[in-house]
Image (cartoon, rainbow, N blue to C red; front, side):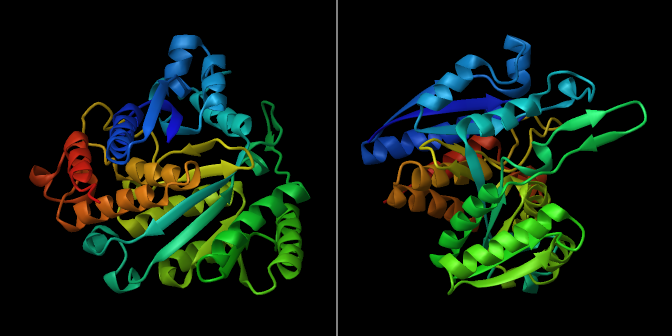
Length: 354
């Protein structure tokens, strides 16, 4: 297979983990005879510094022409002025809109030997294997924003079609698993959530009548993710709620550095990134956990390139590397035994066996 991949290292630890992802993908190409070509472009703070634009036109063109996009991270204290007209995060939001990726898929699985890295009791972590599907291009993040000296507002708006398309993706993913779907909203307070619940209920009844659906308010869902996480299989929710709940769910896995994500839509190009941020406090130290990025490479192979065997091989390599005792600094209290980003990546590559 020939595939063009746009690589967006971004800011903070983004370049470090992006290199890890590139190296793993390159090894997969070598092992299976695929030709992966990379186009590296600016985004976020680095794009502001070099192009005075968080999403330059060259980046947009490269992404649109690619088969998939890999993103490291965006943002950092250098660009944290809330009154700035251009901010790194605008690059990420703009990219999602340009690529028309409206569904963010975030798997959460527990590697047994990491149960002691989670703040939860070990008995609560047994059998956790869930997917969180987050609507990505609607809601309060994309609504009209206004501010005066005395007040501010952020408009949260959802169209019926935006809800329908994300529910269809979530229901199809649930159908391929346990056919169990949890829809999260705030229908007791928000009108957008009442629409969300009505549309979800009607669509599932008409198109997925055999799907077992549960509706939860977001505050209850946040509580149950901690008190009974293994009860969940597929969770679907709106943009802001999904952003918050997936960060909470990352603690089940022991570290935010472990979790990958895929952003997909109706177009061919998917966006793949670890869920962690730019982590400026450890940027440049070479200690970032690359597993979230490498897991995102597995999702890229599966969802954009339809290479399931290769995707499973990468996931197994991460699992086996962790189970064999390899740890980065975020996963162990014994810092003298912690591996660097490069060392951890190499161990995972060494475990990429047929």
